[in-house]
Figure 1: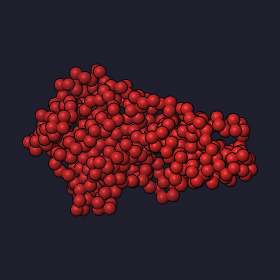
Figure 2 (figure 1 turned 90 degrees about the vertical axis):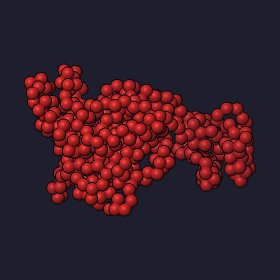
Figure 3 (figure 1 turned 180 degrees about the vertical axis):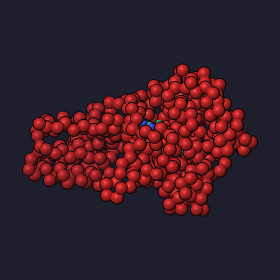
Length: 428
Ligand code: HAM
């Protein structure tokens, strides 16, 4: 009996049409990052489990129940497929002493892994583009991140998006708030749902993040972290908002925005959309001034954000024509006959040397069936070589889109003619 092998639940194949769109998106994103002076960093997908339990937080959903962790069979080490990129980036920056003298503007992109219940916009392997700025203290870098996001959304033409903003203050302010919050939640313990009871002592701030309608009354009346912020935190938050207003970026302050990872302090933000159903947040981040020291580095301020590629692609592609392959070749080479094949092969290489994208027909077949393939490839032109052409030392150039006559031309003259047809005044 044959076994049917399938990909894993929540982990997607990107077939060529989709993968080409991803590449187009990645090219836009690379240019955008470059225009703000960010440089790439690539870290391994597999890290020590400790990095994430320490970095992301023991009592977060990610560490408690979503990580793909396993023991290295050879040396017993506990390993984890990265659920996010910030901890790895900070680990690498510390290990290679990158912020010894200079602050760093960095970015990465790639797959992340979380064992969540898959649905539209939520997967077990998903992809992020992450941006991290390390070594900057002032509110200007927080604002830069938000403003640069706004520019990308504008460039992509995304619609129906909103920016939510909050400040989580500093460690002492959160500790003072936490004390009062726990006391308040304990007084209402019997009204908490299961998650709320569990989080009451481990991660009480996350109780405020509850989506359970039955909990909304308790959450609304809970002590607000904002009321515990000191002068410095408030000043920082004010300055971020001032820069956003200056840059004409609309935002909404959401005092209940707490984020699902423990490393944040002060500014946190989420970009949401009404177009993706339950998975509304397509980009999120904030300041994490304590993480570098927590992971063993010399204390250094930092902030950053990450966007979920799958969610952004869903938003972006809504406005695009999805029938047209993005990367059609310029030329499809059709050939038949023993002498025609090597001749056509040489012509194809010659065209590639001149910079054209060329698909060489492989697998034989009649001219008719080859021309069908040429048409289906989306190429603008077919170059046709048969015995007659070889005998005359020419090829036939046939337009596949629009009108235009087939024309015989020597291989030497072909490059220029094609360039003229594709890019000149008479381009089809
Ligand atoms: P995060 O909010 O956990 O933050 O993830 C960032 C984004 O990744 C989310 O807003 C969402 O778009 C996408 N995402 C998360 N989980 C999934 C999933 N299961 N399926 C599809 N997309 C998903 C972080 O990861 C932080 N490291 C961001 C950051 C960078 N903060 C500072 N620097």
